[in-house]
Image 1 (cartoon, one colour):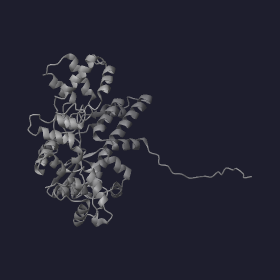
Image 2 (tube, helix red, strand yellow):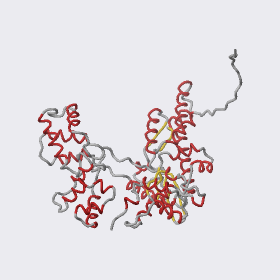
Image 3 (cartoon, one colour):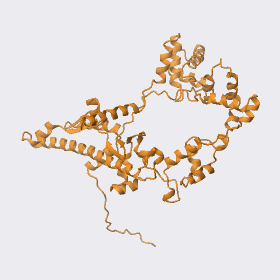
Length: 457
């Protein structure tokens, strides 16, 4: 019979214990700029010794950075307005758009209530995808006027018809095809042909059987292409550009400038709050007015405030080091834009900077660079290689995507490039890419196959 025994041994283990200040510094480093301000406000509300003032750009009415000279102040002001211009506009919501139009139309209160209800039932594209039964059930639950009655059914139909007459054209359609139909002008001499293409020939057109469609409609290929061009200008998602919430503000953390051969990388400080320690608290600690528990209590508040201030300063220092390293390792970006990116891993940059890869990852998370090519995510500059052919054939994935798009944009419509032909063209430019990689990027770009892209002359 086997004996059951316990083996006792001494195992030596080394664990990394992070001090509270280090944990806080890690937390602050990972915060995007838009979240850092809220976090600092919360910290100031909990700690009277911490003073957080609004962004200097807002408080001083201009620059992104403290002025160093008149010229620097003018440049900072120009940069500030450039940032504002780069932000997406706040658009009217779909509900606001409908209400604005309904204010000029004659309608009963019951009908207006039903139309407002239907707007809430639209999907993100502006389509009314629910069935009539589902809509009526929702209306009963929402206690909409006369819902569930015969008069309510009449109001539902009337409200759908009224909604479909509003802008943007196609809103309230029951399908994407109906949305296209609603955008056509019944007075257009091509109205019948356009309706026929949408209602009868979509499947054949999706398979690029244009010659057969043209024959059935008695059209020349050129005339069919003209009609398809008209349909191509319509929206299958008519209200997708209207959102209930404001477009998110993109706040750059770092600014990259080029002046001749000189490239500068600077933190955008003016858009962040300033963090200081309350001078009165420091004065009380320096004097002898407080003793015992009161002094210990204030000491704790000041220490925590100083830890926050140091964490914010460390965040800026680390972020600037990483951004400078990125631009240094991506020298062609400043001349060629995204097409000039080359493979770069966070591990390699971390080793060069003497940082942990996790630190680099936190530093780039949710951070943005303002560049001559627009405001770009810092993470976008880290690209994997698309090539197994050695360093000479290595290319960043973003650069290859752009090159694939350029090749297809320049192809002959009657003889589009196959994936294999694109591989050969890239190889001629020194980029060694597998055919399946080209097919993957083509699909990510929303580009159909060469068979579907072919234009029959």
